[in-house]
Image (cartoon, rainbow, N blue to C red; front, side):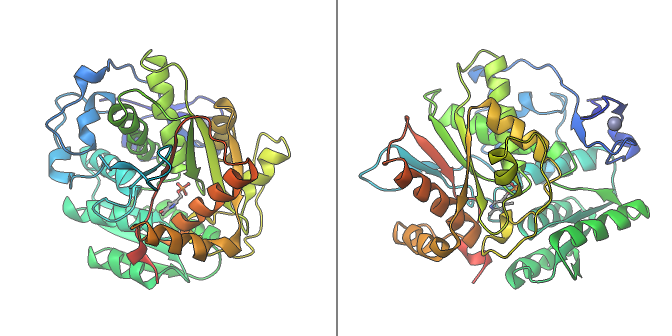
Length: 373
Ligand SMILES: *Cc1c(COP(=O)(O)O)cnc(C)c1O
Ligand SMILES: [Zn+2]
């Protein structure tokens, strides 16, 4: 499919073949809108992976490279967390090949990289996105360099290097890590397979919405609780529901309740101050490393998405994360601290609102507990 990138600031278009990752004006690249037909009948119901929604993805119907890549990602269960509360549902997105939801984005992004004939990819991550890109790149024989900040869980680093990827540990902040990866890309060392910059990643995360639509038979939840650091799940989920709305398959997009860590909450701050763009903050420390993004590049788009759903943004109290992790484990789910923080933030909000929920709520369990001590 000869789909183009389009700059979110100046609308300039680029062919993905040029390997450009940012507009010359400095704007981030989105994917040009592409038309497709989709209804329940178009689901490839014999595919037990997210390519069952191939019709909605930016590939030709004849595209079949994904068959070499898929490891059965997606199609994660949606189940009540507690038996007494049928309205609180968790979507167990850590049940993925590399144990986090990032596989949704990575499998689509690496499929596209393979289609473009890429030989080497570069990426920076606080861990899980790197795990995922490394696994899929390895599976199709693409060389891979991953940049991570010092302090990243040693388990995640081991996981990345076990796939044969080269791990670069960068001193300083998460932002310094991003800079180091960008330098390598600018030096022509490889294709920037960034989950933040590369819009194909969001085409994968949007399947989160299509699955909810299919699994709940169109009986949508009132709210979606979503952790937000760089917003790759949040934006993908929003794009997916927006497409379903535009296709006339749903009447309303569920309200997005975004969760940030109290120690690093730039989007929360901008939202509460009524701003349209997000200023960088200083990360004062949090256990929720997966959402500790002091300068989210797509902050403006994240704010727009939350507001478009008449949503809300909340923070997770740091002193409740360990307790929340324990509680989820009591219910049978062993998650990483970032996921516990998402739950802690939600419970705080729920209690403050006298436990009143408008319809069902879906909260994703994004990362597995074994990823971190
Ligand atoms: C990546 C990640 C997040 C946050 O996703 P963003 O795309 O940065 O908003 C949350 N939880 C886990 C477990 C993650 O791996
Ligand atoms: Zn531009």
